[in-house]
Image (cartoon, rainbow, N blue to C red):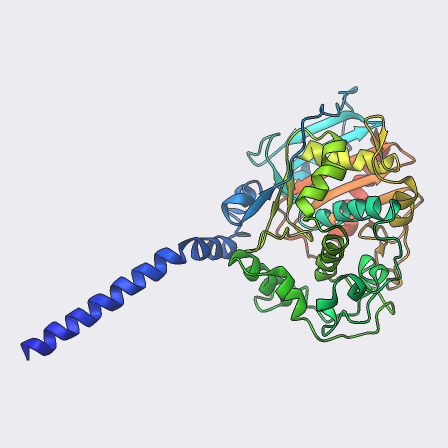
Length: 387
């Protein structure tokens, strides 16, 4: 009997030691998963959105050693009536307004600071579009109607087998991808867990095999399409996205702080939503686009690409917001009105005619409610008219 008890105790001890060892081995993954599961909680979301490197693997995007492109401070302009309520209701954390390249308003809220590196979410898609435009302009990726499989043969057995580069730029791939952020089992949330647990984004993309429409037939917002653009860029250049973005876009733009990307377990950048910058640097990006790719006295992105990518070309539904190459336009947009936007209230709003750029970061948990997008655009238009 004693031998049996000793044997059982020994076995339990071995199991306990093994459990502890596995726990230590997987501690980082478990910590990241727990962080992801509480990422959007009301009491933590603001802090989390300024500290995403605490929850995910990351990769720095060097700003280089060049001078900062200065944003002069212009005459402060009163914001429209109701702006303060809008800021509070949407949990806006930062608001920077430029008029003709000069700061006319800058404020930070919810305990955040000017030097916080804030998560872009899908504003990152528009950054990738700019990088793609540079490569397209120099002939590295010359043909938008080439198949994505011409560059990434590993997608030949996936739902992307017949999609062109233009299709994915315009979110017209036709792949079946559930973008419901409120459904734990949706594709977008499964992808988030792959990222948090150090999995492979390329592998996740290669697992998508179903389509709902022929490529090019209609626009449906599908975030994984942007990852496919990143795969094409990496295949065409033989370089990773953080290095390319640093060399070709971030360095020349003269940002004030080096951004960082969230990455998967293989160090591949989360290009569809993982870029983190200061709000002033989001505004610098908007100012460059307002000026058709020119900033700090140099042409960084080809003007033709900026024009082509920021006009409505995708086959969106009537009455819906319009789309170009990873850029949004309001459903009733007037010429020169362009938006980069991300979930929870991240925006870079550009009104070329008014000479206005508005950069917004927020932690708005009600971002999916009816009328939110229309209400935000109405607020941006009022701010632009007030400058």
